[in-house]
Amino acid sequence: MIEYLDKIIFIAVVLIVAIILLALNKKTLKWLVERYAPDDEKALLLVRRINSVIIIAVALLAISTIFLNRENYTMLVEKFKFATYIGLVIVFTILVALFADFIVKYNISKRLSQNRDTTNLKFIRYFVTVFIYFLGAISVLYAFPSLRVVAKTALGGAGVLTIIVGFASQEALSNVVGGLFIIAFKPFKIGDVIELSDTNMGTVSDITLRHTVIRNFDNQMIVIPNSVINKERLINYNLNDKKACKRLEISIAYDSDIDLARKIMKEACENHPLSIDIRSQFEIDRDVPRAKTAVVSLDKNAITIRVWAWAKNYDDVYDLGCGLNEQIKKDFDKAGIEMAIPYRTLLSTKDASLNLNQNLKTSDENDSSEDE
Image (cartoon, rainbow, N blue to C red; front, side):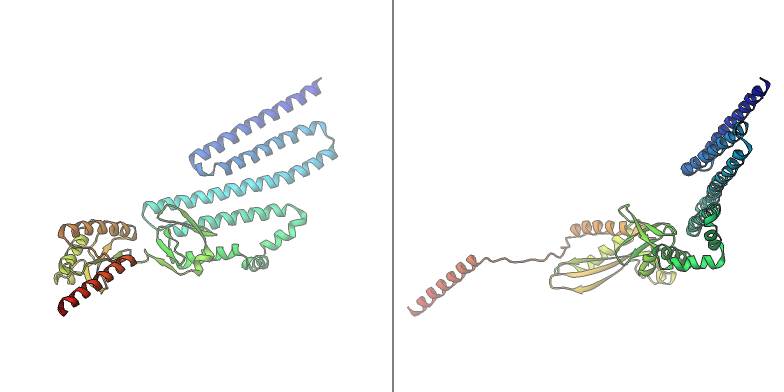
């Protein structure tokens, strides 16, 4: 009776300890999610489940010592060690990756508060995360005797080189290399407005190991592989000088006053709130116009006048152009300046025949009068 009582007490103690550990595991990971990693809830939930499985497995293993003989117990312990090793490697890998991600995100937030570029840190964030999970996968492979050779080879210098060469021809690694080139040579950074040769245009919102994300002006997210971007010719509107020029061309009729039209266009540019003055002090002292205007072409039906207006960045230049179009049209209407409109005279075949017959009849009557 005493022997059975000792076993019952042992089982009860094991179960109580397991329940306490499960509760601590749940509360600790819930606190981590709420305090540090609200965006990584799924990953921490996986850690919690793995920890719970390990705790339950340890409890069952401890209880099994009462019922199993030494040989079976030894076999069970070996299998438990194997499963526990894999579980702990997975948990450790996820926690280290989350910790590294938290550190990088903290530095990104710090740089953003200082209005500094975060492109490098965002790329490092992805690279470090992938590298940590790669080491975790190698550690799991090492647990399997049949796969230890693969793990050792992958960790060796020659093995890493072989893997890189093997995947170099693949699109995935070419995108990673493309991302490294973007970070190293900085043709653009996050927040820049760029335009690719295939008319993809927008603001760079993210640069990952595989692709670059561009938000166009319709708020659509365009995902472009890094290897494609490295091959394309692109325009960076924020590289060095962020000022942007809006070149506006308006055609007026030939009987309109050119000088008045140029004056109206110049004043509209100078008075627009988004227009900036890029003149040097030397030009200001010599009364060089803030907005330059010029007659650029004399077409068949119109005189084309061009005006150059400047905005502080490319985000403002579109609104500047729209505002100038509206204001110049209103000012032209007030001043009586006619916009160039092509005119066409349409003459139907029937009307042409009637006019021809009428002209011939009039001509015959005139000839008869002269003969008399």
